[in-house]
Length: 135
Image (cartoon, rainbow, N blue to C red; front, top):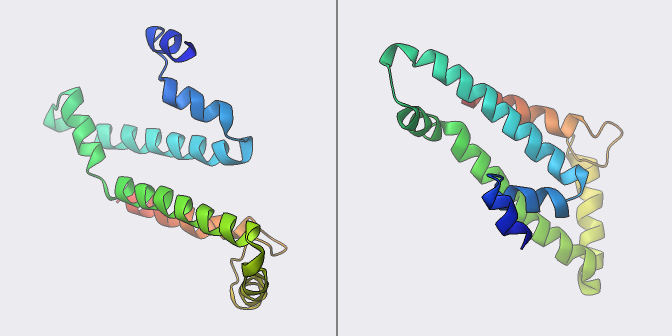
């Protein structure tokens, strides 16, 4: 019933539902990604202004950008990693393997999120994403 009211009001029900059930820690990166996409779309609109494209053609040009493919890969990879982490956390038979993997990651991966500066683990992917989108 809520979805029908939302759709009739012009609000996408799927976006609303995702915002309702996801915690802030998960929905904040989605919001930031959407804002980055908005900025990049505005940049492409200015860049292609001399071609006098329609709104549909501008949207199609934006959807062809390499950033869209990369963002889709991040989403799919995050979903698969979430499943693997859930299995490793909840399945007691895998606990020794999970502990060894965590210890190895802390020792060998400078971007491992459990380090002192967990913000450094997001800096490299965000810069890479911005470089690909804005070229």
